[in-house]
Length: 87
Image (cartoon, rainbow, N blue to C red; front, side):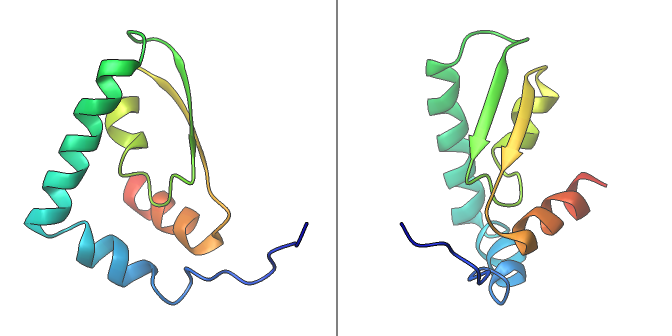
């Protein structure tokens, strides 16, 4: 097992969060993933663990629907982006 000590997303966070997900392609991708998730989740309120959840693009819509969501990500930069988006 190797411990990851470097945040490989730190230099890419803004470009990924504000760039890739802000495009039409990114919004469509998020919508399609959300619809697929909804086919497999129990109705809210249910607990959801979003592993590798990044900046919350899947977590936040689920939370708005009434799910109890925990967002988990190894990247401090992505978690900071999630906090900014949540605010």
